[in-house]
Image (cartoon, rainbow, N blue to C red):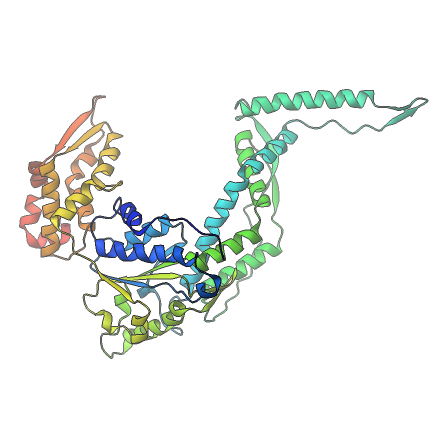
Length: 464
């Protein structure tokens, strides 16, 4: 039995998601349950744990409604390794493009980097202490070793003891000066690992594991074969300390533990978000560029069902990775996917199109709301923005109207409209004088800058 893990309940997960994503309650509920189930799995008896596989989710809805953001936020909440991939980037084995297994290798690489950062933070205090001692060795040369003199009464070490005492006192004085920052601008000479690496032979290997990944593996192999070159450089004490801290951190980090933890985390809590899955749905029997659509689906199938994928950190099992797929499905339907792949996404959620009310909430409620961003950005230029309630309503109304008349790109429409509304202010700032310039963004202000574009439907297709 593994150690029990306490984690957020589904209601608490939704509460956290509400801080960043507006609406889409059904989708939030599904991912909250999937996330909580993953933690429940860690608490069940060992004999049944391996049989409990994640229930993958298929999100159906137009772009800009929060599909990616939901997946990204739950990964952050659970501290899970996460990557987003686009299904249209993959091609069937034998065609030009990336193979589907590369997304697992990318996920492992992401997990490795994250675990290495955590391990570095764990040893950073010791690395800084070691770096401090090494820097003092450079700043204060130790006394030369004196040979012991033997007389009638034995060893005479008086001079040696005095020198050691003087050296220790000097070293402590320099330590205090360094910690006080008085030595930061002083220059010292030290050996630095050269960024120039020995030339690496170019080797081309074509296999199912992907040319890009194999090439990187060979670069790593050859770079480890050759010792890193060092050169003597004169640099500031502050820079020397940072370099020594990095070198000590690298030395103290247990790379085998980092690799083991990264692989374990991917296998038990990895999350892969596959966007644009509708682009690989076979709408009809076709030839030419579309011939690989069904092939990509069949290549995805074993990875999602569960298989061993070879990475440079060893074999990784994929059966407990949670897959969240998403697509607009304008031209195709989920039923156009091959039956086997449909079966691997048992939970399907249709996302809601965003209304004017949703746009108002998106502009004001999230932690990083667009209006808050513009307010803080222009505040740095002594511009005080004041978005009135009717101004926000008007921006939201225009976003809804343009989405209906042209392509529905969801909340991304707000970026386009707000940028156009704030264009003149952003261009003219900073204003002359030290006094703060106040700008009130109300419905009239918005209409002045957008009315002509909105009336001309052809123009709005290009501008908004």
